[in-house]
Length: 201
Length: 133
Image 1 (tube, chains in turn red, green):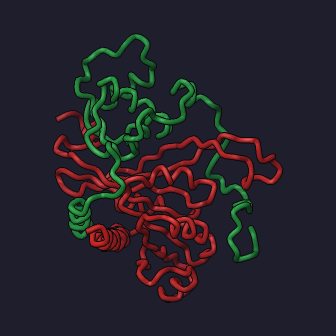
Image 2 (cartoon, chains in turn cyan, orange):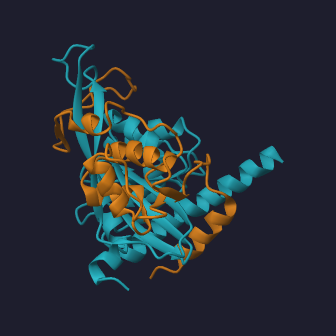
């Protein structure tokens, strides 16, 4: 085998397939923490370049002007078995980044929407966008020490979610808890998958 | 922020949160002006490997293309290659797509971009996640 540092970086040669899950949420909600706690590699960061129309971003910029910005995206990796790896991509949920994760979402298992009870309204944007898509999503409430004590059913009502959309609680700092949140999403995606196969049968 | 609960597609999303910054246009120079890959078949999770890392690239190949082929001497995803090379994913997608077309790189998985993962894959992921303690 090669040196430890480079051996770490690469995948075993037995891997033939990859899958991905998006972790989306407002800034500071714990996306990077969750990705980091379940990832077996130190989370990596890429910067994506975006050209965005000035409209809707800055009222002082005319609608025809564009500017180039970069957005940081953290991701991690979980080895599922000797042939399959799962990637977790943390992406910002704000409206101006939708183009970025529209591309990112192609072929994904689904989206885990991480929310913070102290600022639930910051999740409205991303949920509104997801509801217009085929992509399965689940909501994970990241509990902070000073989070208000709100029952999950109240969260569901406040976010106006469908009865079947999973809502779970998690501690993004904890590996097991974060994996359970991802599991809730994947179980839902599997059920979703079974339902659509029946429709087409 | 808008005070009304009614979604308004034209409203400003609020002040910058410090997540993004102005950046010069260098990425488009690396990709020779293209923002998109020639084929729509590479994604962030696409697994890349150079089938023959010793094969010489043409003299016209850019520094970034050479670096990408070297990086893919062994298997890794497009996102990982981007992060290690410190290049945006969109740029590496364009480069990888060209290098796949020219035979310097192979895509092992995630190419062909199915609309959704198949149920076999989902079952394996479920099993894997259940094993995390």
